[in-house]
Length: 130
Image (tube, helix red, strand yellow):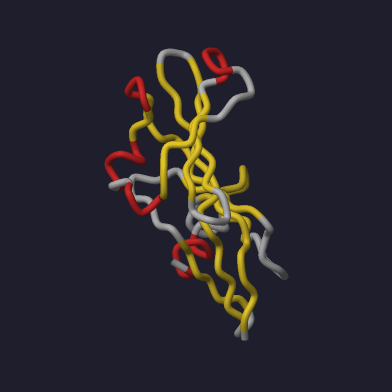
């Protein structure tokens, strides 16, 4: 995972290399890990671990955003690994407890009720260790 995140910290610029005529890329440098990260995913992991300057950072899964039928819905994963679902149009600010994260299959997490599709998984920094 560390290699993946750092490999994706570059963006093409509008400039072209005078020697090969390819796009020049801007490299983004991290001096510290962000508090939140998000992934557009097909597979859901409960934790992601990254290394930066010999220090290990662990992010825990904290939520999901789904989209379908021109509407967004969400799930929140609490610290005690309980999953709560919200459809704001139907439920307002009320979340419905769906159960422990361990009771869900990856396939169940990728699709929300009403066949909405997972578009983002959200992670928050959880531990800092040497």
